[in-house]
Length: 94
Image 1 (tube, rainbow, N blue to C red):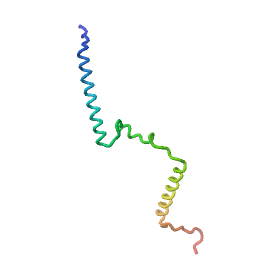
Image 2: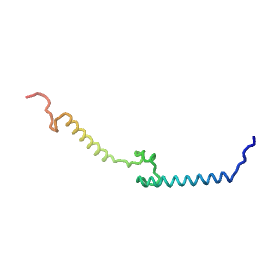
Image 3: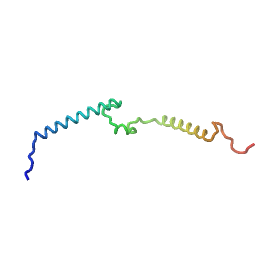
Image 4: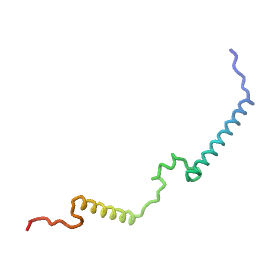
């Protein structure tokens, strides 16, 4: 069986057609990102990894956040015990 000949014009036409389709797809992706309020060039895959783009917190900010969380947790535990914020006296009952 004879080997098919390389038809350069056919391949160039196919390449042009594929490049046109690629540009159309990229245009549609850009339109959808604009409708969804995303920045140019960001995709759903890239935006899901939020941790790598966060600003670092200072030590003071981390301490403030930790203190606030401890305060919320203490209030939650008081509510669960039913004390309503009043301290329970431990020891002898008089």
